[in-house]
Image 1 (cartoon, helix red, strand yellow):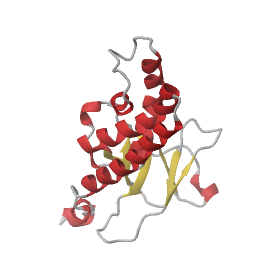
Image 2 (tube, rainbow, N blue to C red; image 1 turned 90 degrees about the vertical axis):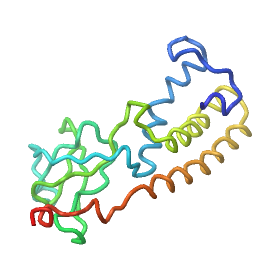
Image 3 (cartoon, rainbow, N blue to C red; image 1 turned 60 degrees about the horizontal axis):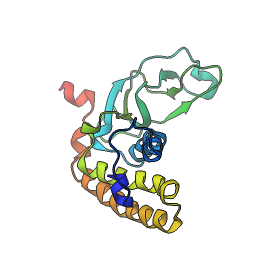
Image 4 (cartoon, helix red, strand yellow; image 1 turned 135 degrees about the vertical axis):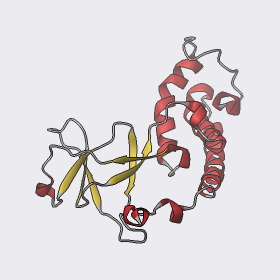
Length: 187
């Protein structure tokens, strides 16, 4: 799709060794992750109970530290135990002495809500795929066409499509129903 936005002939596969396929391979993952992080996409939302880390959070003013989920691109929030309760504060730490990042918070046994790395294209919504293809085209435009005008036009199109995609995605959720706390569910 991205190549067609540029008027470039399609590739047969990503391993064919052409300039277009090499550039698609170069930009694909970074572009996908960028667009995934640009919005809290419904299809990419995951929830996971926090797994305690060995990191001592008291040094940074928190009570608990949890492992950063291995498939996490962005922590969105920590689920509130009670609907309408205060927002739960957290901080992400990544130190050279740690293998992985940690989520420091004062919440015991949190449910971490995050954007997952999505590798399976079939799980992408149609709106996301369209916006993603325009962003990818923006990254490919100058290396393939050597024309900054085309790159600028394609990135302007991305802005239109990402806005529409965000709107479509946001209209498919009812956040008030999602955040029912564990205490209310127990009733």
